[in-house]
Image (cartoon, rainbow, N blue to C red):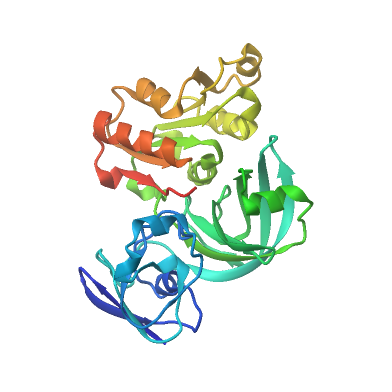
Length: 347
């Protein structure tokens, strides 16, 4: 079937399978369609149906609050093709001009599940076909046991990864996280679509790096650190990592962050911020390569980065309120241009 996209940069078209997700079909065909979460929560991929009758999937998607359904607006990530159709997208759309690898469909098997805290877990997926991705990207993960897809950033990084590693936080009424936490899911088959996301790290840009992550939002930052370490990036450039959690009991990846900090002691600073309690002295003694602070992570970052905003790219990930606070700080206080602030907000 033919899908036509009318945008501010002209008209483009691509071929789509019957019943295929319209956003995914456009992205895998190389179109730079607008999106953030790709799972129905943010509303970024809204479009108006000019011709045709796409079928709408998740009728209660939070992102639908941003569309005018009476004017036939849809979320492309929640619409599937039933025949030829034409969509009008309120953005510029390019064909094949994006950086990185076009996303594709894939499958894999959950190979490892490990609980990190009472409500945070890491799980690994052995892919049937290796995937290339940029550090900082994410994929949409689906299982037949739970309707709909969930977006998770990769923790690991390697060029042509045969295994993808993710961290997930158990959320109230989170059906996928409840499923994952409910039993040993080793051996379960999952579907993957990706890679996705524009909060990507590219060493050739040659700038200092600022990363602000809250909770499980540290995942993509760990991937960035893995690639940077492999490139020896912090041998001659500065890195600043701020990781926020509520309490000491909520910390995780402390050993991994310590190893990164210890490997580049002169140029990489890692600060762990506890928002809901003072820092226990025992935690500071155990992880002497890290710096600890009390407060909201974006506030701590603003205080400690004062006067050090030059020549850097900022990466932000975490719960939407934290991301919003960090973005305001980076725009108003740091005065960074939008091209030097990278984030993917999904939650």
